[in-house]
Image (cartoon, rainbow, N blue to C red; front, side, top):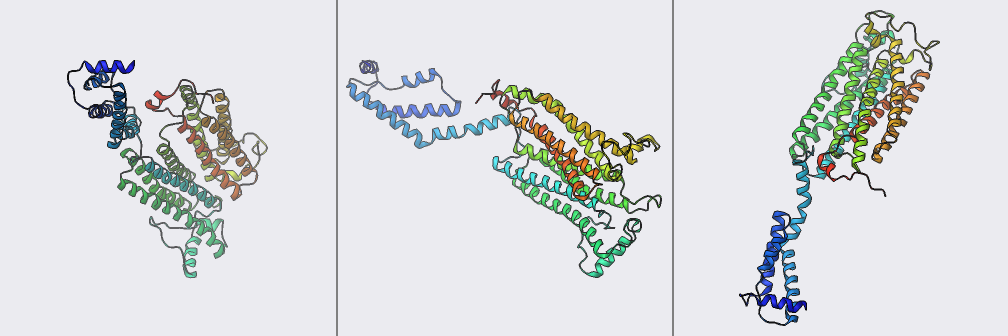
Length: 476
């Protein structure tokens, strides 16, 4: 029945004698070409293409069926041989990514594809880890009282003492410093070598970081991986890192000056120490945030409900992160005033909850930065408030719809905050040993890392991603 209808249709045509296969091949190529140019063709276009098929005269139904099958296979083989279909579908992902980047506001910090983003991300994470180690090494240098062992500074650095005569020259320089006269008088050359190597390692580790950052940065710029926006950001971080060496020497120089009284122990200015540590924290945060932005241009999101939940988390996570940063800076003033070696009791400060001399200095603001009692009380209050705020963040968000990664991250942050408070109390009760003091400083940066990761994870997705999300996440 179907074959007789086809025969009657072909008989109505006026043009005879043209082979069906060539026209079908021409039709198939035209249709595919329109597909690649326009994305699809309408029903009207299909009708036009079919109407262009020549009419045949009387022939058997078997012949027509065999001809259609053969011509269809030939045309399909022709299309695949020319690569029309494959070229069209291979470009779909590229076109979609380009549309998302250009039209929907998703702008990658690194060009040249996923491999380039991975390589640059690894480099930035390694740089951030190097800065983390610098902070830990700096804490060890301070706790071992090694920071004032080198009494001069060169931007490019210099070789360490290699002979006994060189060591004696450096030791004589240190003997002229107030720290030797008031604290380390009678120190042997061997003891001096230890504190000298600690400070020397801290300085050279920083210079090595500069080289490790600058060389790959130049290479990636030359390859064209880095966008202008990322290049400006990394240039600013590199300049801040170069300035960190100057800030460090500015801090050390304050400890080489004669103290105001012979009863005052020589130490670096708490303001300069806080500036040095805050600058290091800022460099680390900038590198870590940028690395996350390179490797994770879109936040994790399963549905629009998760996006709304993440927005609510962000409103709480941002102020909590700021509180964590302020608490870490207050710890720098505790270190600068050696306040950790006073009031080594908890929860009371000695026999009282609040010491009587917290406002003994004039003007009043000096007490918050130079008064040992006030500085330690501030740090205790801020640390307790931070732990309570992070706990409140967890409690306030536990019923929200959010991505599982965000939920796990909040739980891990609560655990890290509890560990950091435990380390702080243990350090205080143990009279600040080097091991616990260093762990407490590393814990502060680790807790800040968790807060940066949380704030980065709950940022708003791009419009292109929002359009693809369902209202509610699918249950597996």
